[in-house]
Image (cartoon, each protein chain N blue to C red):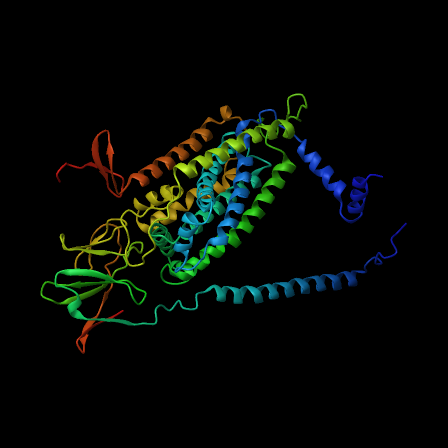
Length: 379
Length: 152
């Protein structure tokens, strides 16, 4: 009996190695529907990004200090002194932005291919919860460097929470740990960012993957007309799909490193609670909501801005049509793309608002509503 | 072959007893969970939510020239202190009533301005334009033993 066989035997008596291995083998060689393509690597890319965020996040925690005294200085130290600190923080910051972008693309893919329809409604709901959790990571993580931008973006963001009628003020105090953003807020956001949200995310991801694996990826046929997979046309998870992922992941990682080097995240100016700088804006993925709130009275805007997330969350229960192919559901696809375009447009207007830019050789100033106005020279 | 550890088929009475025990266990677990949740909720409510302990700011009135305004940060709440041309002081909350940004005095335009969403206020704190829903709160000022005292 070889040493390897004996070791395996020893473990087998104590832990079900063979059973687990057989299960993994079965999962690896699972057959996927024939239309599974490069677009289906977006989900795997998100898993890759989540792992990257957890690893770089752990490394950042080694040097980061969550106090108003030290937070800014510790990020500065990390960026300027700690060897490769700039790379770790750069990957974490860019990884966060790209995770949101890839999440949106992944949801768009699932939406257009009608993959959320029966019996995969809960996979969609869980995916939207992953999206919300990721936005929560963005909001809490943005404060941690404790610079002017992060301090004031958090002040405005938590003030929006505090303007909810009746319970708003208490809610604001609970979120901030006091009347204004300060040490208590930093401690609360840090706890959410490094303990609560990561466990929530891991839980949601596990549930999401279990559902995908037990139901398999959605075919393109309409609900109730699904045909069993034909092994001659089906795509194998390994090696066909995994080899696509092996092409996409390194390219994506290389793109991220390039972005970190070309556009490193800023250190900024240390937070000063007595001076609000001009042009405070949230991170790009909150810009559409930020701009939307400007056009409406506070309460109306707040009430209306809760509608799109709810529609997104419960969409599979609202759209009960059976067709999956985009050609058979032109109205839904147009509606989805329309919402995406409107969101992008709002975000762009939010980005341009309250700034002065040179467009086609002319100085243009955009007011808070994004209305452009020519700036006359010598004025 | 029947398992010898299998309990004998329950009589209707026994099944009631088991249901009761299950319900009692469930209720006990709920009480326990509430016993943990309530103190946790109270713990999360900030202990110092009543605000800063210092109730007033004192400063030398001659440290600020007439016709100027500045933001005082000590004591937790930012305060905008304006000194009019005639030498009189006015203290206002420097926190914009819209979304909490800190306002500043624009001497050129004789206006209080918010940098976040272009809200403007009169030197008295009333809203001139922009999204702020309420005027800026004003704080009483008095001279105490040669010092200007702002009660916040």
